Each structure stands twice: as structure tokens, then as C-alpha cells.
Amino acid sequence: MSALEQLLQAIAENPFQRPRLRANFADIPFTTKAEIAADFAAHPPYGSNLTFPRERYTRFCQTSGTTSQPLAILDTQESWDWMLGSWHRIYRESGVLPGERVYFAFSFGPFLGFWTAYEAASRYGCMCIPGGGLSSAARLRAMVAHRPAVLCCTPTYALHLAEVAAREKIAPADTGVRRIIVAGEPGGSVPSVRERISAAWAGAEVLDHYGMTEVGPVAFQRTGEPGALHVIEESYFAEIIAPQTLQPTPDGEVGELVLTPLGRIAWPLLRYRTGDLVRRKAGPGFVLDGGIIGRADDMVVVRGVNIFPSAVDEVVRGIPEIVEYRVTVSSRGEMSELSVEVEAPDEGVSARLERALAEAFTLRIPVRRVDAETLPRFELKARRWHSGTSRWVV
Image (cartoon, rainbow, N blue to C red; front, side, top):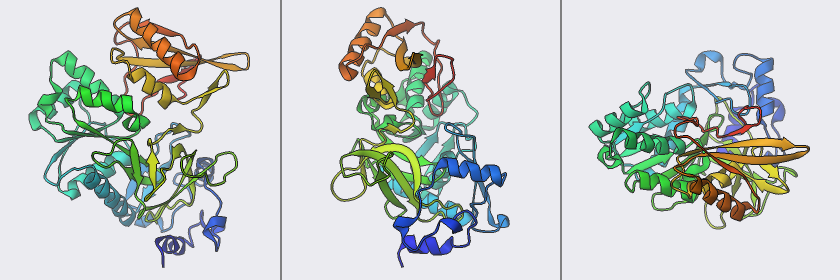
């Protein structure tokens, strides 16, 4: 019996999944986040997607709430251990060795990735150093004191830590960090972002990772193989579909990633539409060429041109003098327009970015310089895109 068949058999009495099950897996309907949110609203506080009695559940996590209200998700110890096993694969493929020290530069809120990454590294044999509750300067001083070989954080926060290090006159090389595993944003697979982080951290290798609270840790980047995310195929059944037609996309074409976790029996999802746009690389394995390209709901159409935040990020990060930036999405009649604010040393940098954006998108996107340290900084997922009414949209 295959792992997929075992999963379907194990969840046959799950109240949420039972009406969705079909004899043929291809006939099982896709699951959307809206459906899950509706189920939570109908069956508070944990929804009905629970395979076992509530008493069996020992783990709690919560989605970030960037695309809907936060959802409180429960796991049994068995499902939790399955996710830790996927993290072991991520560490191994990233070149992390048992016995190395790993620094976790995040606040340890209720998000799945924090806790699974930390606990898995401990079971893998690493010394785990938590940075929760500390300022960026205090985290840097802790890294200098303990010299971790590995840093885990978001791409944005890796850049921010380097910025703080310069202000505090701390040399990133003195931290001992040789590898930086990043997640939460597409930046780890964006060449200009990856190169900028590596340069700021004295040549440390930057390794991307992809996962979601709803499904768990999904994909890894192999050391020495930038720009490619490998789906853990023994843990996930992955599909890529055209969002409009829901039909499979050929290798090399952009589509929406659909995932079925094979071992998260306690809180299962079948054919979950992640909303993340990817491109499968031809050849062996399920490899996402260029990592996560963007989100289907984040794309902005400006004068007929499709623009993803990750594409803008790549252009901006290609200009090293830009410390931070913010994008405003405004409307002119029925049309969307973009403008950019940058923290940069002079107006010449703003002009360079305008030219680079025009070359990348064949559009004039105005760029305005602002004073240093006036734009927001982010520890978790960066929200640099907002509407003209100041409501964060990305």
C-alpha cells in the first residue's frame, strides 16, 4: 500500500475529510484556505479537521494571518514527529552537521516553523540557541559569544541584522556563521537577495527553505545548488496547476503549487492549493526552479504588465546602496500604479533604481528617497507593499 493510500485509509472518519474522499485520488476536490477558514468559523476554535479525539492532541500552532484570520491548528505527537523528520532532511541537505551550533533569530511566536525547526535541530544533534525576546544588537552579541555555524531567520531579517551589525561595529565574520537558512519570503532563491545576504555575512552560504503552517516543512535547497528547491517527495504528493483552469501545467511553466502532506494524519489536507506560484524543473525529482516565484494573489497588473513583489525585490536588491524600501500601490481610475520609497545615501541612487525598474518592466515607476531609518523593519515576513490608504497588502 502506498503512502497516499495509507493516508486516505487513516483519515476515513475525519469529519472534514470524509465527504471529500473519493476512490480515485484525482477526483478528490482541491482544498482552499477559504474552505478551511469557513470550517473554523463553523466549528470554533479548532475546526472539524481532526482525525482523532481532542485529547490525543498535544501541539498547538497558528497561521500568520497574512491572507485570512489566524487559524489555530492542532497536532498529535506522531504528526509532529513526522514534521521533525522532514526538517532533519532539510538540515542534512543544507550541509548542517550534528554537533554544530544553530542560532534561531526569531521571537518564537505560535508559528509552526519556529518550533519544528528548533526541536528538529536539537534531535538532529545540534546545539540550539534561541534568540527570542532579544533586540537585534543583543542577538548579534550572543552570536559573537557563542559562534554558531548556522543562522536561521527570514531573508529580510538577515539583511537587517547586517545593518545593525554595522551600526554596532560588530563584524558579521566574528559571529562564526557559515550557513544561513532562510524562509518565510521568496528572497532565498532570488539571486540578488541571496548574493547581498552572503556578501553582508562574510561569504556565508544562503540556503532557501519552503514550508507552511498548514502543511509543514516542504522543500530544501542543497548546499552548493542555489536557486532550486527540492520538494521532499517521500513526505508530500505535489502537483502544479494553472490557477484559472485547475489543469496540470507542463514542466517549465508557472503554476500554483498543490500539496498533500502524506504523514500529517492528525490534521490532514488533501490537494491543498497553497497560492504559491512555482515552476517545475524538467528532470528527476520534484524541483522548483527559482524557488517560490510569487503568490497568485500578490500579483499587481500595472498598465498591462504583471508584476510580482519578488521581481521588484530582485531589482532593488541589485543596488547595494539601498538599505530598505517600500512600495505603494495606488489606483488611477481602473488602473493600478506603483511608486517606491528608498533609504539611500543620495538622489543618484533613486535615479539608478528608476532606470533599473524601467529596464526590468518597461514601465516608469517613480522612486523617492527618504531619510535613513524612516521605513519599517521586519523580523518576520516583510510587508513592504501597501495601498495608498496605508493598509499592508503584501
